[in-house]
Image 1 (cartoon, rainbow, N blue to C red):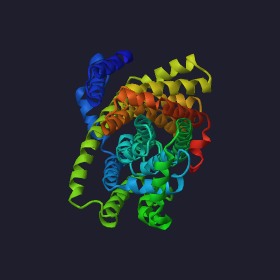
Image 2: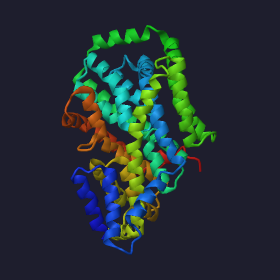
Image 3: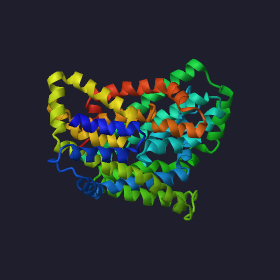
Length: 430
């Protein structure tokens, strides 16, 4: 019966049914197939409501709102100018600056596509204006945008924490070093690419002189409040001053103060349209979360996690082999399924396996999110690709082809993260 339920789910997706409705349909089908299973339509819809009745889940729309305010407030440009002051005259320095900017900007939002939209809209024209290939620039930004769900705050970490019962604050902290490692790996490839294909040194020199014309102090003063954002969010959580949900509240207030009062890049009247856009983004996410949470509960009622665990562990006994298989599974799922739904459906199934082989649940949360972050850049469902295409007009498949070396680099970092737990757990309080 478990197989039939998954066939219903996959069939609904293939028919183009929105994932929230597809998941709900699969949940109801379980009750229809087995009348003794308490998974009636009433059960499904009642639990969809209670699934989002969560204090911790409030962080999701709040981080989306603060990220949108920061994006409209031009925070990414201030970060870019500051880092370009130090890196702009190096070989591959401007592409490296874009990736570092993405790392820092990711700390203002928990979304990969939002990071691509905010950073890409500003940096891709700069890169092409300086002579870099448009396809390369777009592929780099859409891949680096995956850092938006690894560097905290991260919406997938919030959802994984709710699904697994692990500390969201610990997941946030655990994502810092893996995110930096991935960023460094992407920078290494970008520098190699620039050295191999060459750069327009004259344009770069002119741009660097222009950036330095304001002086380091002027740039630092202009960028100070943008640079302070991750310090406030992560420092508050790590220091025990605020919970992740309270940090989301603080981030919204801080975003308004910085964008409206300090930088004056927004007016209070602009906040209404930003609020409207944030609701349009958050509502479908919460629908997926509620539906996928119920699907996970239905699978538990069907004893699916135990059956799948018994099957996999009987077939594969090696811890290394199991981790490789799980990585391959997550990478494959990321090709076709939305990230949050993947987490909510797969976490109850994979957690017993992870516990059996002695993998720390926080470490596994990082592995899962990094895998699914790669899914943002792989067709046919890679959302970052579609955002990049909308920004540049380059077809999605062309961006995907250009992104292949970056994806390989991402996967290399994933292997280090998978098999060296200390990368994820070094900063987590024992």
